[in-house]
Every structure is written in structure tokens, then in C-alpha cells.
Amino acid sequence: MKTDLKPNSYEWLEYQKKYINENEIEIIMGINNSISVKDLIKKKILDNHLFLNKDSETEKKTKLHANLFFNILKKRNYEPAVFIKKPFLVSLDGYHSESKTMLEIKCPSKLKDILLWKEFSKNNKIPIYHFCRIQYKIYCSESLKAYFLVYFEEQKYFLKEIRLDTKFIKKMIEETDKYKEIFAKYEKILKN
Image (cartoon, rainbow, N blue to C red):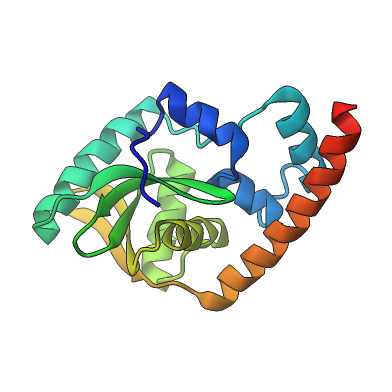
């Protein structure tokens, strides 16, 4: 369900504490092994810690330009949006209500990221952590498809259409159910 929450607002941050976000789903699915699921739960309960996407200021500004570029390219207006599909909360770079399509933007700025994305454009294979995020976002927003834009500049970009992968979503829901069970047990123990 689309909400009136604005991405990166105080209200949005408060909602992040109650729901699973795109960075947390990577941990729950075992795609991001930077911390364990149990450590994620402890941080979420005890520290009220948020695992947010920490885009650099440069990338945020470039994303605004990329969004405008994409809107002109598609002759549609993709606006940032927030959706809730319990227990998930998702923030989209762009959403077009009439076509029920979403936009995910990546603006590489570091050399290692630029090389990774140039390799991606040759092989046409999205890195698993981005695939996970896009699937999560398609599912939560109930979009018919996603446009994945890797944007360097107007003459250098890569665009790919992505549809929902039902096998992946089934696994995501199964892993989320396991996470919720563990979370409930830890919450009971840690809050007492």
C-alpha cells in the first residue's frame, strides 16, 4: 500500500524501526553477511539501530538528475514513493501510478563501483544484492515491473526491465517468517 510518508523524513525513520527494510532483507536472506540475523535482531531491539542505505550526497544529487533523465526518456513522471506491505517497508527512487511500474536508480561514483557496473552492462547480470533489493521492491509496491537504471551520465547509462521472480519471493517470505519467529523469541527474552 502506498503511503504519504516522504523518504528520509522523521516519520519514515520512525516507521523503519517497526518494519523490515531493503538492507535488512539482504541480511535475512543471507545475501549480506556483514552481520548475522541474530545480531540484526539484537541491534533492532536493543539499539533501535537502523540499517539504511547510506548514499553519498553526490550520489543523491546524481539520482535526482538520473530520475529527471529517465522521466524525459519514458515521457512519464516517476516520483519517489514509500510503500508498506507488512512486515515490509520500502522506499522507491521512482513510482509511476498509472503503469504500476517502479524505478530503481544506481549512480556509481567510486572507481571500483564504476568497473563493477561496466562489467554488469557487458554481461547483463545484476549483482545478487541488487537483484534482491529490486525483487523486494517490486513485491512490496506490487509493481508490474521495475526499471533498473545504472546512470553515469546522459550518454552513458544502462537500463534493464525486471519482472517479479516468484521463486525468489517465495524464498524471501519463508526466510522472513523464520526471522519473525526468531525476532519474537529474542524480543521476549531481551525486553524482560
